[in-house]
Amino acid sequence: MANYAKLDNNKNVIGWFPIKEKIGETDEGEILFSPGNEYPNEDITKLVIVPDSVWEERLTKNFKYENNSFVEYEPTYEFTADEILIRRNKLLVNSDWTQMSDVSMPNDVRMKWAEYRQALRDISDQPGFPNNVIWPEKP
Image 1 (tube, rainbow, N blue to C red):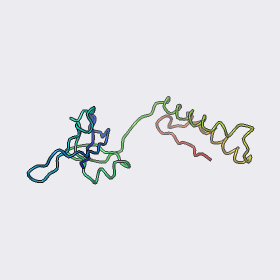
Image 2 (image 1 turned 30 degrees about the vertical axis):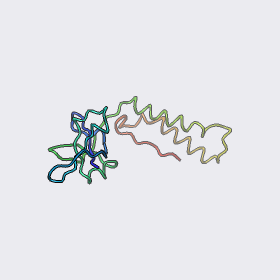
Image 3 (image 1 turned 90 degrees about the vertical axis):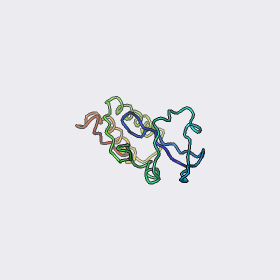
Image 4 (image 1 turned 90 degrees about the horizontal axis):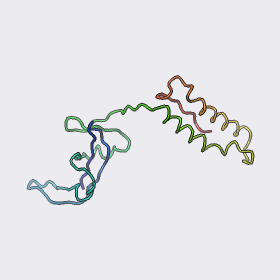
């Protein structure tokens, strides 16, 4: 089995592909795999072989492909205010039930939920909004 990574134009890894189908072997004993056979709808021209050490860490770290090797990096992404407010609104909707009168819970717990919801509403007032938001923790 060989593992491949698909790269975007900036050499960021945008997909991981395990390839199981062996298509041959070189005279030196290197096993050959064909990504095109297992992923016929993928543009395989941007696939590179992934070392086992990178493959094992691919779910917990971010990698770029530079100078023919994988390097870990911290991605930077600037959120728009709309993206933050959409997330905030989903969190509010998912906690609406906590403020309904027919839901049985101790008053102190209900108040903690109310404070959490108010903190969500106040997110746009934070000094770092929208790129440096401190999200409140659910009670």
